[in-house]
Each structure stands twice: as structure tokens, then as C-alpha cells.
Amino acid sequence: MSTDSRLDLEFAYTTYQDSCRDLYSPHYYCRRPVGHDGVHAAGFGSSRLRWEHHPDHLPHMVS
View 1 (tube, rainbow, N blue to C red):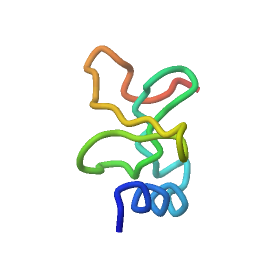
View 2: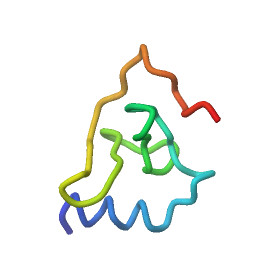
View 3: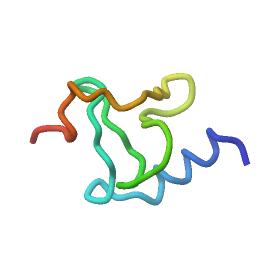
View 4: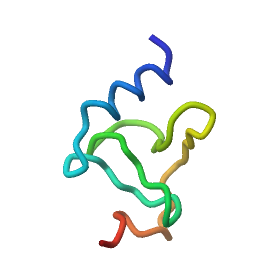
């Protein structure tokens, strides 16, 4: 299974409450499950972003 297919499955089965939500920008936050290994990811297809955690970013999107 490709990394993109694996991420699609994670996004499909992870609720908002159970998602990591590491902030990339005000419009993109991590959709992977809390406690995931590896990079953060958001978006689908050609719009998908991947990023390492940046300590100067907030850990979660402020609601």
C-alpha cells in the first residue's frame, strides 16, 4: 500500500476529535491520528501537504 493510500485511510477513519491537528497554517492542520509516527499530513491528492513538527508552531489549531 502506498503512503498516499495509507494516509487516505487514516484521514477517512480518524475523527476530528482524534486527529493530531498540528498546525501548518491557519488553513491546514494535521489530519493524522493523535500520536502518529512520522511527518504530519493534510489535504488530498495533489493538494496534500506533509511537514515535520515545528516547535514554534502551536501544537493545535486554536478554536
